[in-house]
Amino acid sequence: MRILWIKTELLHPVDKGGRIRSYQMLRSLMQRHHVTYVCLDDGSAASDALTRAQEYAHEVVTVPFRPARKGTPAYLADLLLNLFSPVPYIVARFRSGALRARINRLAATSDLVVCDFLMPSVNVADDLPVPAVLFQHNVEALIWQRRASVPQNALQRAYMQLQWRRVRQYEAAQCRRFSHVVAVSAVDAELMRREYGLQSLSHVETGVDFEYFAAPSDRPRSGLVFVGSMDWMPNADGIRWFAAEVFPQIRAALAEVTLTVVGREPAAALRQLATPHSGITVTGTVPDVRPYLERAAISIVPLRIGGGTRLKIYEAMAMGTPVVATTIGAEGLPVKNGEHLLIADSAATQAAAVIGLLQDRERATRIAASALRFVRAHCSWEGVAEQFLSQCVSLGVTRTLAREDRVA
Image (cartoon, rainbow, N blue to C red; front, side, top):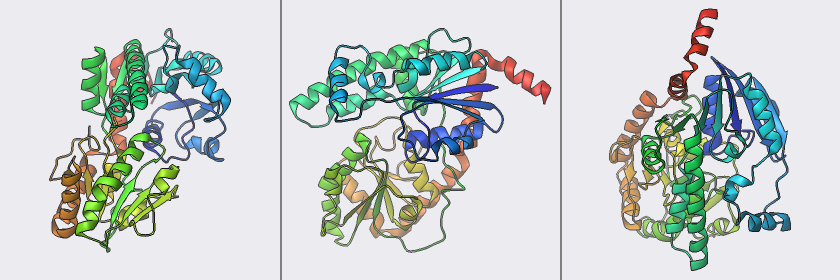
C-alpha cells in the first residue's frame, strides 16, 4: 500500500507525545508499506531532522512555511483577524496553499491519505481521489473545555470558552468530512461518536518502545519525577498545581523528598519553582529522559487538563517506575487503579498516594512489576500499527493489499 502521511512538522527531535506516537507508528508501517511523508517546514526543526526523516518514511516532502512568530506585531495582528474567522487560530496558523497543492498531487499516486491530527486538516481537500483518514491524538475541544473550567480570571475564562466553542465546531466538521477517524483510546472514540455523530470511527491503543525504555536492574530509587513537554499547557498547569497543593503535604510528612521536572521549554514561572529549599529541580530539555525515570521512586502525572492518552505513563511502566496519576492523567489507558498504578484526584489523596508508596516499598515494587507485565503483553508499537492498518483495510483499500500479496 502507498500511504501519504500529512503532518505540520518534521518529527525530530522526537521529544513530545504527538511526535513519539507518529514516529513509532510510521516506523512500523514502513516495514511493509510505502510511506510518503509531507509536512510544513518553518525552519525550527533540528538540524538533522530532514536527514533522519528517512527513519520513518521512504519519501519526505517538505513545504517551506514562515508563520508569524509569537509575540511579534504580525502574530498579534493574525490573532486579531482570526477573531472573525470560523477556523480557530490553532488550526488557521497552519494554512498553506502550497501544502494543499502538494497534497493534491501526491494523493493521485497514493492508496490512502492520513491526516495526522487536526492542525493540517485545513490543507486537505474534500475531493481527494483516495480514502482519507483523520488520525486524532486527542479530542482537541475537550482540552479547551477543560482549560475553560480551570480557575482563572474572568477575561481568561471568557477567551477559553470562546476558543472551546470554535474548536468544537471546527473539529466536529472536520471529523465528519473524512472517510474515517482513528482515535487513540476507546474513551476518545466514544466521545467523538456521541458529540460529533460519527459513524466511521475506530481507535488504536497506545504503545511503548521496549528496546528503548527497558526496565533497569535493581538499583536505589528516590524522589519523584515528572516527564513531559513543559510548553504544553496541560503539563505546565498540572505541575504548578502539584507544586503548590500536593508537594508541600508530601514534604511535611517526608522532608527529604525531591521532585524533578523533566521537559522541554519550561516557562520562567515554572523554572522559578526550583528555589534552593523547595526540593524541586526543573531541568528543561534533556537528551535522554531514561536516567531520570530509572532513578525515581515514583513518576507523577498530575494532569487536570488534557485529552488523548499519556505515553509517559507507559514509558515509566516499561522502566519499572511506579506511577501516581490523576484520573485525567491516566484517561484512555486500559489500566487498573491499585494494580498497575495509583489514581488520585484531590491534593490530599494524591499526597497520600505518593507518601504511601514511598513508605511501602514492597507495594511500590508489586505495582511496578504488574504494570511492566501489562505493557509488555499489550503495548507494542508493532501491534498498534497493525490495529491502525486493519482499520484502513475496512475503508475499501483491500484491493491494494490483495494486489501486493499477489506480487509478493
